[in-house]
Image (cartoon, rainbow, N blue to C red):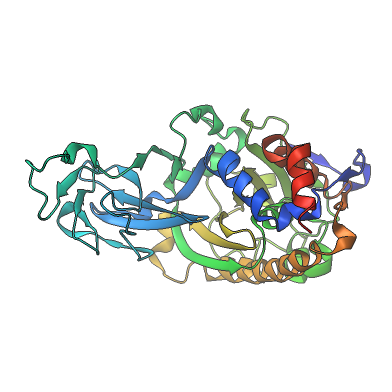
Length: 388
């Protein structure tokens, strides 16, 4: 880690994505196909599914995905769609499946929670011509555990290297050993990319985040990780230093919990940030970790699932993380309001060719390059512009 004074940043101005990239259904579909259906994505925390039969669902575009802990105690991922006539299987956001079976609410076909095989198809005898029950399991996709989180890919060929084996400097936070003290889902009426762009810059902090700016003044020198993990989807966002009169990143700055055991004094006076693209942001504080994952429902609507994690020993008190939760809940809602205004603005003819990022929001330029590399080309740009 090294401290960098923002006044000494070097670089150049970079064009943002064009306006249509934030509201075009065609562009949104390209992103689903070329990014979201190809990358390793974070579904949630392992401890969200403690028992065999526990499940939660996630949505990407029109696709509903089911995650369930099987009888082998592993988390399995299935498309949330019955193989009989296509009914949505589970409508609840989370819950528990009894008797180790997933039952379709339409015609009562039943599937195994461990391998998705078809267990029962009422009035479909095995000798029925043209029917072979082994050909109709639930469609599945790979899952894996990483740093205490459940990850998955809708592409069977997605390389494991996208998730680094180790987090380098950030290993000392022992993410796999932490537990969720708070979880909350926000609904933001904006394109997912605007939320991601906002999360990786603090150029806006002095304008809309008075509480955050008091705790970690944006004008303070930043920490930069000069040995970040080698992964094409890993983005180090830097570390903000606490104000002199703050001991912790919270509304009051009070130290209510012991700091993580392996941190240096410098670590304890910083909040480090990193992202695993396309949809996560992690904030590592002295005594808790905040993270969120983005879920694009449609081109102008995104769910944000936020987690506040801490050492299980401090979470015996159900209010142990209330101060951290309040701090980031205020900050998040300030962000959502600003982002929703931006969603309105990008539709203007005045923003047709996009805008510009400079030194203090230079990481947005890296994200723009990431999106361009995956989805944009001349023909797509021309066709989307021609629609307005």
